[in-house]
Image 1 (tube, rainbow, N blue to C red):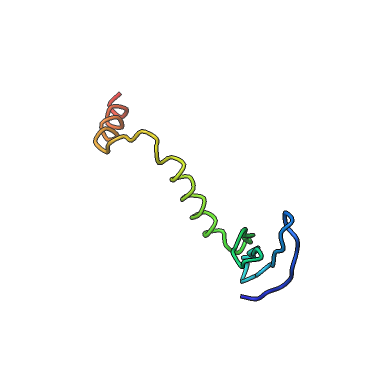
Image 2: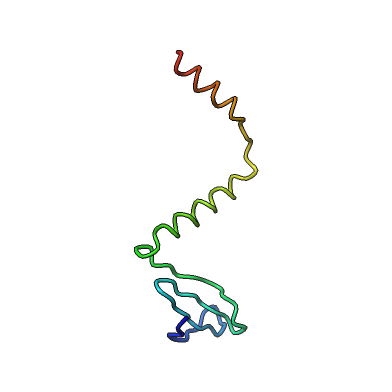
Length: 79
């Protein structure tokens, strides 16, 4: 990682640490607090991240068994 500068963010001293298309904001304790991702360079990474968030947000939704889905699809085909 390469340190490229320092900025203030929400009244805390932060550093910007950059690596190949991903920039991290780090607080005064060295903890990463935010990330900026170059989506042109890391499109697949963003898609994976977005998919994981979407799955987590739906974790408590009701489930449907595979057998029930198959039966529903079969009914649609048969009219």
